[in-house]
Image (cartoon, rainbow, N blue to C red):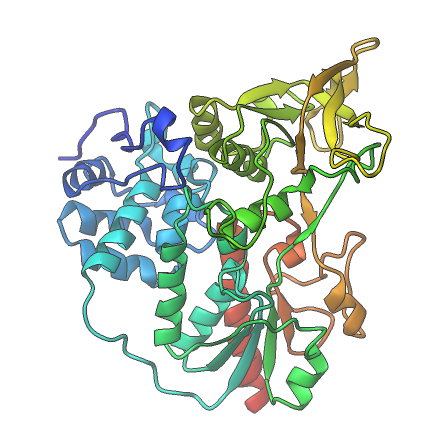
Length: 472
């Protein structure tokens, strides 16, 4: 008999007033007993609606049935048939709008905690797995992956399992892309990412770091001189956007990308880090997505007394995951919704020799109200007349979204892109250049880890088909 309790097993976590002062993982994961109990809430539906909500089509009821039977390693093997990054997905995927959003149990209560179970299974495997990974037989074909984020890692993993000789080219000094430079340690420990990368290396995937494709090598050189028969571009969207308001060039103004990269990749929060980062007293984060939550919660952990999320719509329109918003509120982040910055104010010191010259001293905002829906279907925010006010601030972080880096477009003749630099690709990831595929944020603009993984998976299948047909 299924467990018909209407609510999920709650996720154990650190106390908010403890965790907002450290960078250790906030959520602690299910125990075996909790996982068994939660798995028994699954009805094992015949039509499997949860699977239709998963961009990589994990066989969800099957893996949960294995958990319910206490076969945790068997559950991992089911997940790994579809996902190369289960420990990552269990932590950062927006399950509430995907697999769990389709769960039948969610109609009259809370859905089965699919993401928490996936995390449990992956962590159990990583803690208990023994023995070397069996490498597939080589098929004699070479492929290249540009970028080691979730799209690139997934594409590489799927192709390696098919026997391809796979090389990943990564611009930074560590593999993982946004998983290592964008998502904070307290949400996704970097040891987890490294373990997933090591799993791919065990399959035979080679990783070349400090390789900026478009600068060190071109796509044409990869094809013609290095002999890669197909190439996947998974370079993400790392070019930050700004508001173009007065004061954005002041010291103390960061893009969220820079702020998080300094903290996450370069460990600027550690006392012995060689990378500086501002330890501000009052911090404003402009934006309402997951990146804004990450930046705000990081600033709090760096010692800020007051951290504000400034967002021009209401709490109901925040695009960030519900769990991330709840965690931010618990940790003392102040939400100033229906507000929008119009100017970042400089220190009023006029002598350029003064060390305070050119720094942020405040932010000027206007109050907003929601008007008629715009083309996206959301109500458009409009300014309330005479509503200007100022907040004292010594750091402002812009978390307004990102666009793809234009370098590849500039160095790859014939590569079609859209207005903001997103690569044009068909449903299989094929670009305007034969044998060159793309997916993830490089194609869609900034989106989710699991959508990028889905694109990498689709492209891997298409690349395999392309090479087979070319050979024939």
